[in-house]
Length: 109
Length: 115
Image (cartoon, rainbow over all chains, first blue to last red; front, side, top):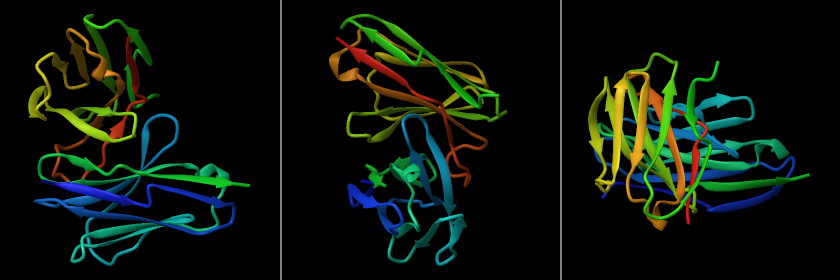
């Protein structure tokens, strides 16, 4: 059965800390891996990764994919309180998007 | 200029009732989806439609019936509501069907509470 597993489930840090969120997967017919940020409402798209070893970067956020070891990481440097959210990892195969359970990040001042 | 919109945002109803949730996207996308997010924040696909045609039904009970009158709309009708149907329902859309290397854009969600 296809599955996407995220760790940790929950993370509490102080502003300025750097965090690493993990996503491992076992999915048939892999196409891409996506990261979303979910605050109170809709998940909003962060990154799509299709190739191993190529880092995607947007401001303080970056992500990389390892298709051999079947995992991805999302890094957030110099965290801010506005980074507090649930971060969702999802893997796209030929049929659908399969989500992990998310990592809840809380950033305190 | 909302991309994916859903109505209503909140729905509180009694067991056994029938209710509908509407979804519209103005992105010009061909594919639309319904997801269910449970209390543990786990998002699971329910249905996918491409060009008004059903392409995925993830073993959802037949009390749930999606309807796509056109490419920009995908509505969800639920009959005989049960307590376990309480969740947040998200509509989403993408330019291409799954497998097309494309991100999905999500609506704001509809929180359904069945009493």
